[in-house]
Each structure stands twice: as C-alpha cells, then as structure tokens.
Length: 79
Image (cartoon, rainbow, N blue to C red; front, side, top):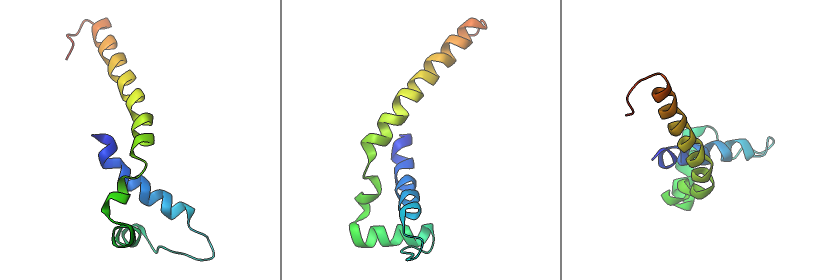
C-alpha cells in the first residue's frame, strides 16, 4: 500500500531533480504533476513501481519482525 501512495511523489521528485538547471521544464511540483498527467497519462505516475516496492518490502518486513520480537522480549503479547 505504501508504494502505491509514494510512487507518484517519487516520480515528481525525480523529474524535478533531473531537469536541466538552465532550461526549467517544471515550475513546481503541481506544474510537474499536471504536465506528466497531461502529456504521458496518469499511469506514468506509477512507473517504477517494482523498484520502489522491492526497496520498501524487505525493510517493512524486517521492521515488523523485529517489532514483534521486541514486544515478546518485553513480555508483551504479539499484535
């Protein structure tokens, strides 16, 4: 779920950071969003979903496992 919500913002951030300094393509994040959706379609915002997911999934899984182990070590019930 997190990847679905983060992916569009990651696309906008990447586009803003990679635009040439001397020829600004986008004025701000909102302008970038509008231009991407208008020129390339709304699904473009989720391009790169798999790499983002593959970065978040292992981290989130490990965090949940460690959290449950710490709760157990402190004598608390698992969620």
